[in-house]
Amino acid sequence: MEFFNEFLNKMENKEQREKMHKLLTWVNKEFPNLEPKIAWNQPMFTSEGTFIIGFSYSKKHIAISPEKFTLDKFREEIENANYDATSMIFRITWDQEINFELLRKMIEFNIVDKRGYTKFWR
Image (cartoon, rainbow, N blue to C red; front, top):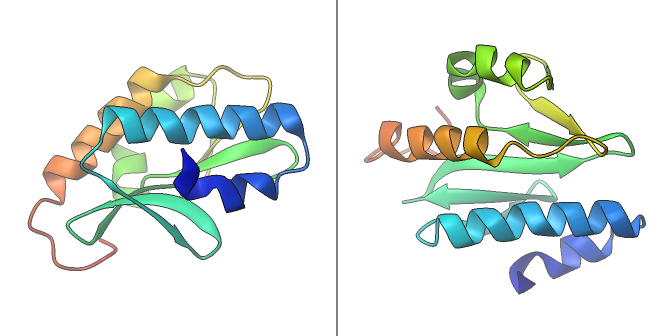
């Protein structure tokens, strides 16, 4: 996905860069109506101008932010996937598999729940 190339090229670790590329490409292919965006130096996807999901990374993990409301709704599934979560994000360590089905549910939920929402954040 070329839109995020500048962001991805800043990642020094090749395997991590490839995993992040796979994740962003998956979101773009599965949800082609979402608009890719870079804000606060992080890739994210929006719908009708409102935030749907965002991503960042560190040396140890990918951080996924679906907003607190959605994170709380899916907290049990996040824990069942063995992902670490805070009040605002959950983390997928670089050696863990990405649970794409869980991501699909969260993204679909946000798209439906925020339809017609006029602000960026909940």
